[in-house]
Image 1: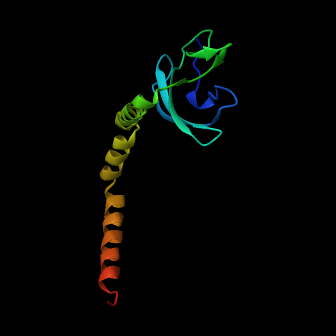
Image 2: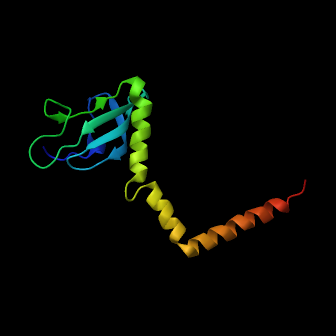
Image 3: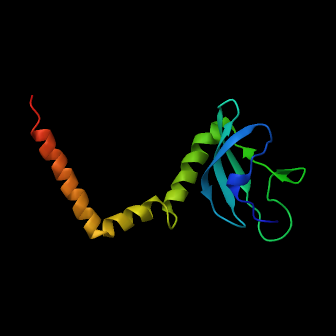
Length: 126
């Protein structure tokens, strides 16, 4: 199967307006996404991305990549876990926090900015 970028999968056709990828494990893996339908309704979708070779991953319909729409009862669980996995992986939210905390100059500027806000608030008339 060929690797298909999940953000490019817009099937079921004439149904999906946008795809917000929550988690993508890359080639040979799987993806989860928040799907916005044309009527504004949001659903959670899953799919196998595909890998090297022919094919478009799974599910597919008539050789077009498509999403499996998660049952409503499982949406919250799938969405929360996908977001958690995305935040934990290298380059995710936790890595961003670590990088910011290790930037001493930026931390110093942020501290000065916060202290300036306290001073501004203390000087307001009551």
